[in-house]
Image (cartoon, rainbow, N blue to C red; front, side, top):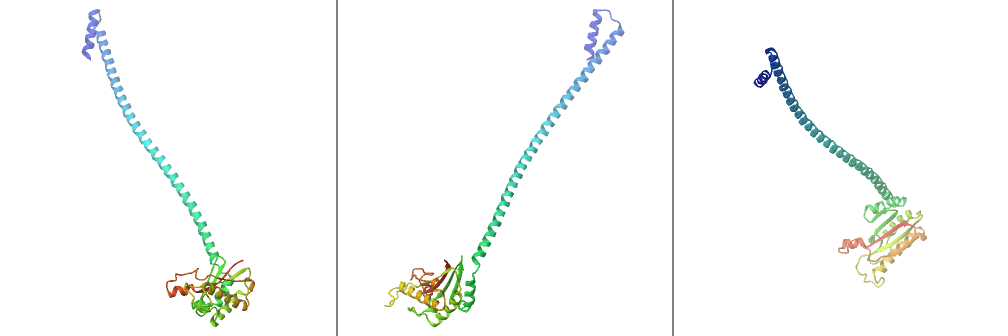
Amino acid sequence: MRTPLVLAALVALSTGCVSKGKFEAKTLEAEQLAKGLNDEKGAREAAEAKIKELEAEKQALTARLNTSESRLTANAAERRALEEKNAQLAALNEELARNTKQLAQAKEELEKKSSEYENLAQSLKQEISDGKIQLSELKGKMTVQLKDKILFASGSARVGKEGEDALAKIADALKTVQGKIIRVEGHTDDVPIGSGQFPTNWELSLARAMAVVRSLQDAGVDPTALSAAGYGQYQPIAANDSPENRSLNRRIEIVLAPK
């Protein structure tokens, strides 16, 4: 930069009379100005470079911030979803607890035995243990099931001695029954009778039910609560495909149900 300034100074000298001291002073001033401009240009370039660097840092920070905000938003959404699921699970657990309690209460109610059941179970303990009599109770309906062989001889509707003894024990428990009907039901297998006294299993089943009704009445059971029904072979509890199953179907059932 010195040569152009010196030339400028020489031009100035050639156009007018200038002292050597002033010339040197102007030359120095020009050099200082040039240096200042160069310094200012360097500073400006450094500043621009710094600005670019800061802009890059700003963009990087903005990107990180956006990523963090996105993660926070996703985490918040996930947390809300988990809270909703927890609330749903809590509601389901409460409902399950209520249902479990209701089922337990219903089961307890179903399994609760009446005083008639307890009395019969106690008085017929031996017969039940021997498998001659089955006793059940569900929803207030009690059923005493007797195999036909404990009551009747084959093809007969006359109650035998063993049957009378069993019916006497049953009658003792039924004498005090209040508010229930006592229905005696006769059932047979599907083997034809082949006897003139009972043309079909209908007549045999009804005759046997009537014989049990009379025995219970004679033993002191209120006759106004008694009734008889014959179902013949048409309500089996097992398939009539073996001697054992046919034996199960030949039965008398004494049913106690609310009026």
